[in-house]
Each structure stands twice: as C-alpha cells, then as structure tokens.
Length: 99
Length: 325
Image 1: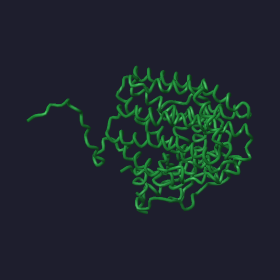
Image 2: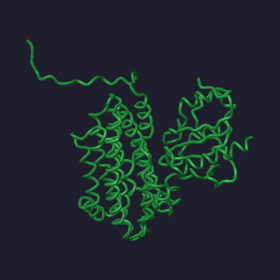
Image 3: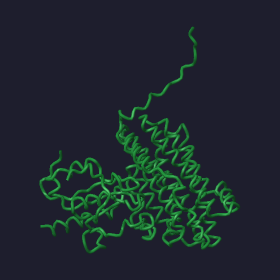
C-alpha cells in the first residue's frame, strides 16, 4: 500500500455513472481509507469529461466532502496547456499559503 | 452412423468471472447502469417552446437531428459491428453489442422528438435532405471507408472514435444552444443522455486502441498517428463546410467552430494523442458549456482565479460501503 508522509494534493480521474455513483476509483478509495494518508491530504484536483453533465469531475467533490479538503481545480481528460499553466501556478501559490 | 458436416467454429462461452481485462466489466457496468429509453424524457413539454421557433429555426433543428440520426444509424448497423471481429476478449464483444444497441436507441430517439414536435411533411423533407446533402454524405463515406472489413483493426477504432467524439458535435451544439436560451429544454435533456453515452463509447474504444497499440513498433505507431491526424484534417474540412451550410443563416457558425475544435481535441485525447487546435481556438461559449454540464460550475475552483474561496463539497452520493472512515 502506498504511504505518503508529507502534505500532498491528490490528482485523480473521475469515473462516475449517470447518477454520480462510483466516481472515485477503488484504488483511490483504498489509498484514502488509510488514516495516515488521509491526514496528509490538503486538496484535490480532478479530471473528468463535461459530457457527464453535472457529474463532471465528480470524484473531486466526493473526496472534498469525505475528507474536508478543497477542490483546487478540475480539467477535462488529459488537460490543455492552459490547465497545465494554471495548475503549476496554482500549486506554487497554494503551498506558499500552506507554509 | 457418422454424419459429416462442414466444421463450424463455435465460440467459447463467455465467462464474466474470468476477465482478461477488468476494463470490460467496468464499462459493461457503466453502460448498463446508464441505460435509458426516450420514453423516459417528457418531450411533449417542449411543444409550446417548439412553436416559438421561426420556420427557419425549425427546419435547421430538424435537419441537424436527421444528420445525427444518420451517424447513429451508421454506428448502430456498421460501426460497432465492424469492431466486433477485432475484439480481443469475449467480454469486449459483449460490450460492443451494448454500444451497437444504444446507438439504435439514439437513432430512435430523434424520431421520438420528431413525432412529438414536428409535422410529418417537414420531417420527410429533412430525411430526403440528409440522403442528399453533400457534406453529410461525404463525412459518412470517409468513415465507412475505414469500417470496411479490409481496413486495419486500429484504423477502424480511430474512425469510430472520431465519429463518436467529434462528428456528432456540429449537431449537438444546436440543442445546447436552444437549452441555453431556455428553449426545448426537455429535448436537451434527452440529447445530454446521448452525449453521456458517446463519452463512454469514445473512452472505451480509445482505450482499446491504446492497448492494441502497445504491441506495435515505433514506426507503426507513427504511421497510425499520421493516419489519424490526416483523417481528422479531412473530416474537419467537411465539418466546416457542413457547419457553414447549416448555421450561417442563423449567425452561429463561428460559435459552432469553437465547439468543433474543442471536441476534436477531446477525440484525439481519447486515442492518447495531443491536442491539434490551440486553446485560443477552443474557447467555447460559456453558455454552451453550462448547457453541456448544468450546475457543474456553480462553485468556482481555486486555481481558475474566478472564485474567491475554497469549495469544500457538501453531502454527495457516495458508495459508503467502500469507505471505512
């Protein structure tokens, strides 16, 4: 089992069905069921597809709610250059505020 | 006495408890959970709204929907079945039969819209138009060429992903546009069900494409990539003409083209390729994005810079059995 021992932001895909069920991948659930891992989680970035309507990148919301951390960003599929820029910039600012 | 008969190959019985690829069961479960029929959507609530469209707007809408019907018909009767002989697991074949059937449901849905909202003569005229429109016929032919039995399994998959993740969107734009103007909102609900299905189809076939590609040499992968981008360019050129011929008269062509670029990039991403169109060309009208994923943007996310505070989700549906905290 993967163990994370410093603060981290989780980047995860989303796999929900038409009603939001099953959005968080089993492997991610197993990882977050570990209390030590969860204690280091600071935020979540979720990828998804707007074709899923209101459940776009739903895994981000589910994890944010379960673990009481913010959704920092969402992007579609593999992301665009703009997404990459925003995440790089955003992460820098985010860790500055955390420290 | 022995009776001699020609040997017929009997397929292996499909055992869903012995998977070669877990993705097959995952997608089977998604697709079956997402199953729907047009009767579920109260289309008759759009009758009054339909009457507020001009004759020109009505004709455009019916034509767009017959164009979509044609693509769904191709995918139902030719596209998905053409992928079956290339399936590498029996479960993949089963998933493809589901995909094929849902394409028939999609094609059937447009006729439900027609019978609820439109005059038979207008619909008949549009079906005649769809069988004659040069752009619609040209893009159909390009795809069908690749579905030919002699085409390579991977090129068939590329064509299939381009149909499901790119070609539909010149049509899907219009019900999203009406929905953003609070028109034909029930029809838009039905179209969103189709859009959701197409995302799973494009993802799954793109996934199978990427898996199959792993066995190829670098040179073979490059040849396929050149083919894919070449086909995308050819389809894009036709889509531009198609879009202009339909949307010029209502002044929406440029808006539709942004949506085409955005979806072309997503189709390429399904195949594991990089984007073709730069971000500036993919700035989809926010009203269309909001119609595509209603309520998804009610909270701003932090890095976009548009919101002032973090979002911590409220209660959401989860599979609580899986979470042990």
